[in-house]
Picture 1: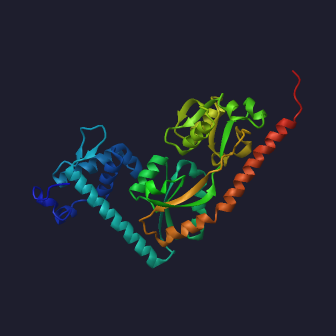
Picture 2 (picture 1 turned 60 degrees about the vertical axis):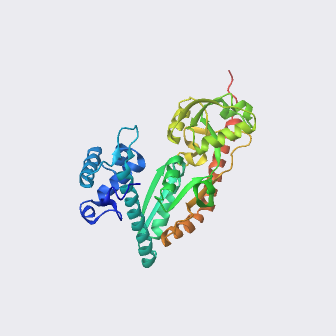
Picture 3 (picture 1 turned 120 degrees about the vertical axis):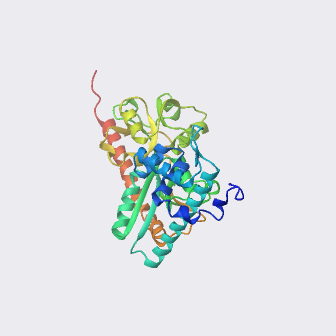
Length: 343
């Protein structure tokens, strides 16, 4: 923190003459730059061009009359003055969020804002839940952020959203409350012309002979796969690592290997798509989705209503997953029942 005796302009937070010259947009930009450690990522998050971000940051620095970022490191870090400004801006944003909560309480559920952060695999069903919620509460404005697990954890730490959807949360580590609300079955997929698609009761020992397409290190899906193989004393042959479920599905369709993914990733194309679900012993692995919020966060009536609303979606989501698995099973049965072509 800044020595206030040496820097009297920072006593008691931002002085009035600076408040009058610092715009809300400049505060948004600076907060994003510090939090994300990048001008480029800040521009992407705020839907601005990088020159706009740079220009507004320069104006803010000129107003403060002190360097705000140490740009000698690979990742931008705030100077002492920058850290003081960042913490003050965070307090302002938190106060505005609290005001939004109090106003929402006064308005009931007629109007307000819901901020939802979800892990990437949850994008296959979260928008539908939000759509149904908005039809029931048409005056509610919603914001949906879809990102990877590490970034969701960071957003929880920064208190950026009201509610989150993710798998296997560590309540103690993250400081959150979690509520299991929907099934998240893990399956093994392959291109529909893969030789293993014609087999049943495939053993894990047979499966690990195939090249695997895996999510990146730190992914919840990858962690599940590695723990499952390790429990049987097996090591999968990981051919490549990709950062998205869609990229993995394309690699599988291209014949580059098999993969373990959530069944939710096949929701749109279903059993008629270009990939098949393999009949592997011990699969599907039953996991759950969790609704999560920070323990210390006072939820608005809208956020509480969304939690209750999402919990009611457990039955239809479970039915959809069961129906999808049955369609893949029917395809397997038809394939095995088909007469073998003579060679």
